[in-house]
Length: 457
Image (cartoon, rainbow, N blue to C red; front, side, top):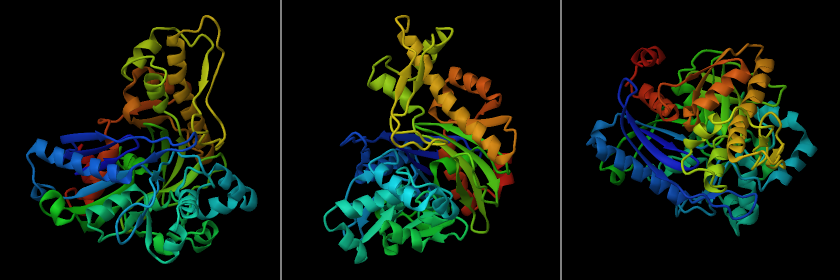
């Protein structure tokens, strides 16, 4: 069973040994925008929607807890939850990875310390995207939060930690290496929370979860949730899970996920590859013996620009319609879009950038704007591809693709054309969930190694 907790929904997918979907259920979650630069979720809605989808998937397939060999958890990364260790209640809504409220704070840190200080330890830069400044904001702005944190009463976690803590009845406060690497507080070479960074952000170490392998049994679900106990055996941030689910097991293997944002990762093996082109170094996964690293570039607004066209501008009713509109015109008629609704991610890292449309004339129609929006996704990804080619010295002649927007044929062909790379869609769109299932399945010997996974596909 894979629990895939994303930015806009919670999904549960149950897989068989061939990686086929036995059952799938999904529940949307509410997005809250309390101010221009803020994006929040309700942690209890995240939990309830995830458990509800799991029960629905089990019911659809006629399964009980005895039929599930293990659970893999994959999650929206960087999203920050702080909760009371006694009551189990969050002290503030979950601050989502898209949130930019700490942009000024991060700019001051960069000016004071320089990018190199953070890159050397964490592989990251000081940006609101990552968890550290979100934790600091909660401690500084929620009444009594700092005092309670310093007294050891508060716990921090990315969404995986929050879910596992609740699923195990508070027995396990853990995260895996791939999620720990997204906090701006974890030394990816020393593989431990960094005391200097914790002090810099004013975060007590007692708040931090234990870091465990991505593939390994970490606990069991509490008795009353699914009618019995199920082993929790896999954890990975969504993009690292996608890399694993697409079987990018070899050094140099690369993929792009076309989701709310777009995320390109390249497996760099057992070495930390430092970027000189605006990318970040991160941990891909750990099996308990070795740690595999990755080079990553993140586009903050990918498929979300299509959601904006649908929900806010109301150009169409279904996201899939965008393909037909884009193909109905020969070009964009000179229109270009920069969908920097929440700033620009890699390789620019401009938290203050905002969206713009250029080249409007009287001849510009809805179809041109829709095509420009889809092209903007590919252009942003091409910037990542070029940066990764330069950093790695590899040609990147092929890319694996997954995520909802990868189903758009116009977008995939345009990406292949401008990037001069073969784009290969995954066998399943749900490769993030599949990756979490693989990690859990390896831990409980459902699969007997990566070769067994490849052979079973």
